[in-house]
Amino acid sequence: MSVPKNAPLRGIVAYPITPFQEDGRVDLTLLRQLVERMVKAGVHGIAPLGSTGVLPYLSDEEREAVTEATVQQVAGRLPTLVGVSSLTTERTIHHARFAERAGSTAIMVLPMSYWKLTEEEIVRHIDRVAAAVSLPIAIYNNPATGGLDLSPEVIARLLEIPNVSMVKESTGDVNRMHRLVQLCGEEVAFYNGSNPLALAAFVAGARGWCTAAPQLAPELNIGLYEAVMRQDLVGARALFHRQLPLLRFMTAHGLPRVIAAGLTLLGIPVGPLRAPLLPLGDAQVEELRRLLDGLGGLKG
Image (tube, rainbow, N blue to C red; front, top):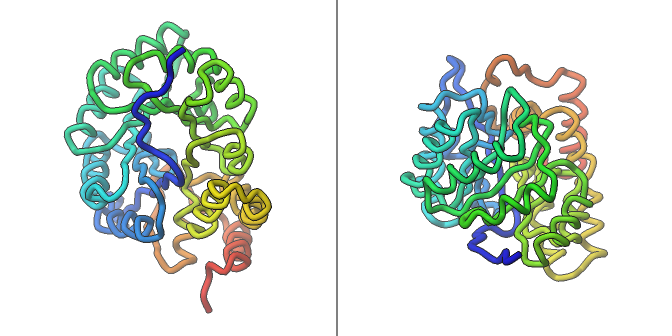
């Protein structure tokens, strides 16, 4: 299989939370500030409308506003990867086209469904989205949120679609990545989406780490990637294990909850979560406080 294609992302791809005002409206001004904060921290890409951005809880109009605000704020300084997933092919195409018009570098599609889709339905869905835009597409495999588990064999088939060029793998099984390399070759562009798997994924050949963690610990996240690029595995292990308790906490308690609480602890309140999501409990907030304090993130 010939895999090398346009895969414009590499390194730490940061996922901003979607902040809300007290009246429930999306806070686009604060979103721009959060994006700018991560750009200045040195991340290598910005990806709005992922799980941390609570994509399924936003209206079409809100998603479009988040897309525009993010792409405009980044202003071409970094690649942008906009989430466009929806239950129907028609709505996914709608959001994919909007992201292209807004100037996104690439889009990410998580096949999702109330009914379990067949392989043919998944392939047809992605093929139709790909035919509707000219942007590079990242396939997102996250059965915990999308309800569908794409095997490496299915992903390899999707990568045969001309502008499908990247894969974000979030199952937490590094063997999936090894299998994908076996099927597609060493040049396959896969990215880790399971925070506790970051080091193992880089060692397996991941081009990047798609994560919300840079909102709380950007120096450690970027430092890990840079150590791997220098082939300093001793340094990479030290950096990884230092942040691992936080990464595990994020995975255990839900990305929007943890990021919202963590940013508040850092002095950047991002408003209420959108119902039915509830904030972390007091005991969990105190545990998060200890984790951030141990990383040197809290001042005073």
